[in-house]
Length: 519
Picture 1 (cartoon, one colour):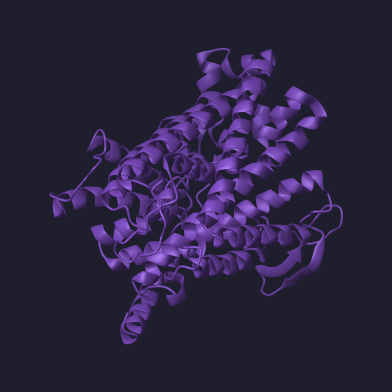
Picture 2 (picture 1 turned 180 degrees about the vertical axis):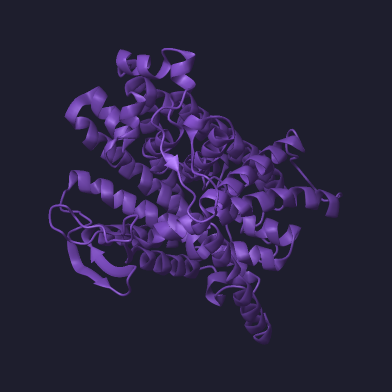
């Protein structure tokens, strides 16, 4: 009989252990597979300029994430508590560092990702129902400053509706959210596997294979790669075609895409208090889920490359590489089929993100560092208030728009209508915290070494395989990516660090209020 006993452990009273090993693997897999794998390869191809380096980017990023997941497994088995990475940082370093992660997680890491995935869902729904458009407005853009506006388009409304719907569903207990996650993850994993099989067996194109793999030189020599220009520091522009250190730096910057196509792999650790036998199942779920998705991602890119020449991948309309590949295989119906697959993928991805996110706010609230109500469970044994707070803030992130400008600073106008073009605020926020997210992962894995020294006798049901080289592999690789971003994407890295540091005064204010209230 399934163990659904009520947990009685360190401030997590009331959670029900509803998740088994399969459920946990489904959360890992479902939270990782969103829209990135169907789009990001165009961005990478433009930067690295060759089929070999495109595949290498996905292979190296997969190995990095696997190394991180294996390392997180030790922390998760050692501290199977609600809150996951927040708890690891708190215990290895200090409550302040844990809060800075949780603060950034709430403001943009999790909520901004949910908003982005919800808009991706609405955008692909628009392929099937053209009325769902970013330019069909219920409230036309209202400029609030030279750089920003607010609006409510039909596309934005659909995105907000999705966020609200999944938040409400997850409020009514873990069992419902788990069922949705399991079904949709199974469907979208099979859909991605189907795309791979079609690409490798049916879509094999002699022109594409000759262009991408005809020789070692064709596979590994960058051609027509974009030039990466530093946006602030006085360092020279670089291109993959220069080779040597320039190629390495470009490759490191290109890793950002695949790394963040898999960035939610650790979400299952946030729900550790609801997993049966977490000391065993958490490490297994992390390893199995991340390993499976990493393999699928590499195979998907191999399918793209045997179906489409690199030039077609690089110039895919709106970067929809998977759609271009499926159209090449199936013809005109490919776009609609791919749109449905991506809608299923993003729907399931957001369910996992929404389910897991509220558990971090719960842990913070129990420490007196978040809204008090977020630290209580509702009648269905889930943090309902935390889900509601997350829902409101995420929905608000969908509404603001950025006023798009070209390199000279002039507003970008629609060629047909002359109307100003708008982006999304959360996209900028996610760019700003890219540096911080990678930094938090590095700091967390360094915490593994600290905890081995601070608590040598602590129970460790699982010890990371290949210690210390496996965690050091991720720490070294991610640090190089961070340094490359710091030099060539300075304007979206140092503001991200400042964005995180705004949590310092908030921490002391919240702590003071919490102490005054007797928390």
